Length: 382
Image 1 (cartoon, rainbow, N blue to C red):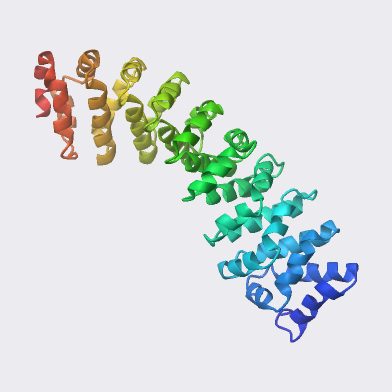
Image 2 (cartoon, rainbow, N blue to C red):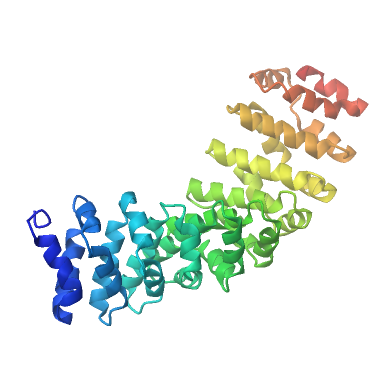
């Protein structure tokens, strides 16, 4: 009602620049309170002088005024239509970036929250980085506030997504990788999830970052997340591990040496079909073109779980189970024999595998027939 009252908004906006310090604080506080109602946000953002006035107060000497100004911009930025106006307002991005290191926790929370919202506009990715945001964002990854940590990780994840240049800059930022890896053990599930998402984004299609992440000792924390209570966190940890090993022979070896196999094999029995699928994809990735890993996977007792997946309800899980079994057997006589020995021989067990599967399943299993002593055992599948 106040915002709709004739002359109310112009009057408050005018006081942002022309009143005494105390009056400016009250005016900023009033606009901050009004901005909590999303219906008021378009009117405030489009009121002449409102955005310049609020941006001008971001550097005010009073923590309360900075909080009101940053809070109002944070609330206004929830409306995507306001984001281009805020980002293009002179001094807005540098002002918000500067507040990331503010002595007031509330101020820095509003600042990082506003930057997160402004990323609704893809064009702001480059602008925010160019405004010098990375040091402040990396610093907030260790903030006492879970909200600040979550929002900072969210901003970094969005800055890196589909932006190769930003990926490199974030990975090279002092403390960036170490702080992100530390968040993988955060008490907040939301923070852990964002940390996992950004690490995967940094690693995706970037061999240099893949190596840096492993060298920064991320594997113990990632492997630990494979047992996390949250299915989504487990899934993203699995996605990272596969990304780190994909087309990266050194990382494949290091992942296995870091004792990832027991947790990965355990995921083959996970309740989530998607988690199971990613687990089997990782194991296959680790085995491809790596004879040592093939042997270690079988020695880690993966075969019972993998063979069990041949009767999984998901056709895709079944297909990938066959793919990994074929990979383990390829050019590995010992594994071929162990695989066939592990397959149930009772007629009733063969009947259980009659669930329709992808057309490539049976041709893939043919690889096991190369050794003549396997033929009699596998003929039931054909």
